Image 1 (cartoon, helix red, strand yellow):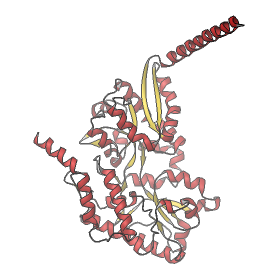
Image 2: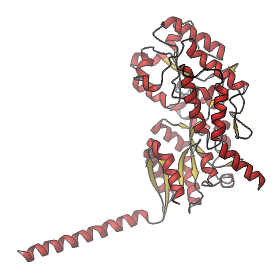
Image 3: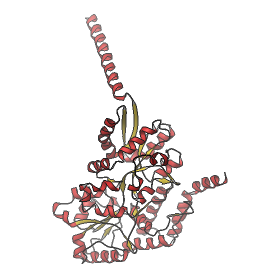
Image 4: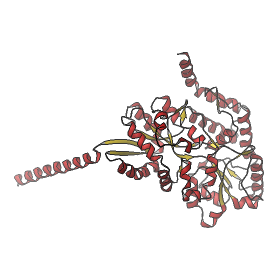
Length: 429
């Protein structure tokens, strides 16, 4: 009995080690050759795994290990990886993150590498491409693009007496007032959630002035352009054209849009798929998109999206560039759009019929010709968050309008204090 148990255990151990040896051989076979580490976020990380099978077939002996990160943790994980000398070879990065990682000397400049590569920088919209240039050098390649446009109920706009989207702020205001008169006191003309800073920043970008002054050393909230933006933005709440609510106070944006609680909404390309899925069939012909109107004609909007960046500490920079080149191909970007709904960064990729024939996508193609980057300083997102917090207090009546620009400049200047110190030391040294 005892010897039988011993024999069974001995067989079990031998079987275990044989199985582990087999797994080792299999794993070694899979990772034989060069392995690139690529970090991507959310749904994009899932899709990258599918797309890169073709890349690996094209490059025998070169494998890509994709690590999928949730957007909520990606920024912190990239910083932690940099601090621990464990950065990937290539990473997807929100283009507003690039200045921070450039300041850390974490990213590889790509100017010379791209010059001899198939990546055609003239095939990108100027405003989008500009988000990848920091202090005159190219640190990323746009992977997909994002901007903000108008989503609107054209049936309710028609009831208010208008047959087309607004072309400038004055016409937009007249439309909003007419819609409000049509829908009554319990409904509104536009939704501007108080916990979103992007709509106001987009309106400010239309003024053609820097959002920060003196090379990003100080806030520029006391500028004439911000004053015009502030007046226009607040007028929508003061005239009861927009409800003074945050997203958390709207149970379901699509249901409220469907029932006509609001007729205009400023949002990004991901909403195209959401509106097609979530609005009832009878309302599908009733909604449309349009570029943002500006103060005196077609207006600018935010240049957003994600970029592909190579880390300085990569030991496989040549192979990493191959990966960036592959993901930048127009046909690969077209497939990426079909799988994710993310808009291609390459203009030539927009010939794909699923984009070229989609009436809702046209506004984005038009708007991308008029996008501008937000300030390329690591502190910008903190400053934008302060703008959002202050504006919510003003709209809710917790802070007077008078002195708002001074308050915002003071907050921005405190956030930028370390930047000023570093720039001054650099100038002296």
